[in-house]
Length: 491
Image (cartoon, rainbow, N blue to C red; front, side):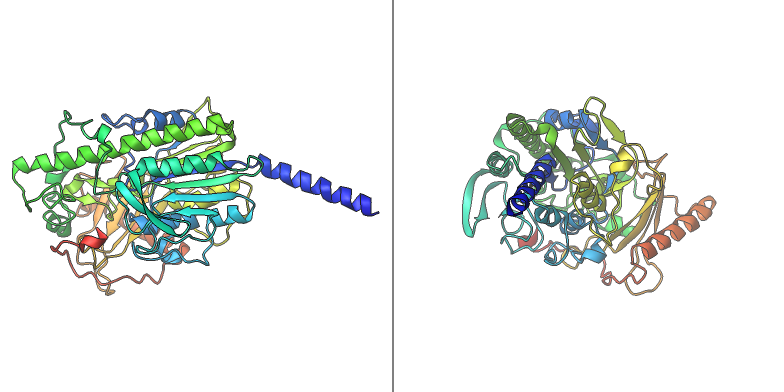
């Protein structure tokens, strides 16, 4: 009897090990402030990204992916947890991810995955200690630097020489190369790029010198926009302001000052080229290990970025460049690598956790806001969302954007700016027909013939709030658009 029991145990252990070995690996590459249109495969006329384009050409390009709060820490917490900011509580860039809040890396870890994180974590400015759910965790305090960042490596803080993108890529590649092939793994990379302040790798520092970069023409079409947008022009987040130190004397609205804007944009583009190199190197590592087709590769941004549209830089607002992000997923069992897909449905950051857990055959996380897009990608989009809610809370540290609440559908967008005191809005609202006006040039909010559409969208916004548990919508008081620069430590 003992021998039979022993044999059963051994067979079970062998079967379990075999099942584990069949589960997919996950390589998750997260960029910071990467616009949806800043890749070759998403239509950029100047930025060449052959390695990322190759992923898209053999995977899924989610063309309409959005963050639910366009701010680094809240958006990253939504990606990890599948929840909106009001639920996961990381509502600004200074709040820790709650240790007791489930996230998809932790679930994978508890399911037998080897797990690692390298690079910018950016939830808790002054905390560079390991976070739960990761066997290996290497990060740094604050934003990190493009060159020679100090990392916390197993409790030892030391400056790692070199360009940030290359450093974290090499760390991740080395770790992948040492993983147990009999167990699945999750490797997450948090790039600094292309977050400000922008410093390209030396070999790419002059890649776009010959490209003419004007202000977007929407920067000068503000007559129908809320006054707060016009008030923002000369600030830290306006095109006449310091432009993340690319303009030394400000505000400057002279025509000649566009040269500073052009220098900033060219540098932003340059940092993305190194990210593309990183993707190519990591794919080669997977090919060398014979694990490319066994690995789910995710490439995405945490939030978008305004590069002069409507006279603004940075993010936070609900305008398209701020909320729309790239998302590319390659995995042969999700879709045929010889038949790449482009998905037009509305996909959100909160969808990443449930989707990856389903692909990895891992336990679900209950009571989240996101939905798995696996069946939708494979053809069944029954009951897929037709609208989503966006929200952002006014920050005293960055007083250049009011409270934002809005709803976007496939064709329409309604945005309003509550003051935070339960009194009528003081800022003009915005209404756009995204289908016919994707650049949001014409604010239709005062056009009487769209009164019915406004009522419809307001009703949808209320419905979404109720579904998301945001019916008691608390927010800070809007103290107005500030003109002072933010503290240098938190820029």
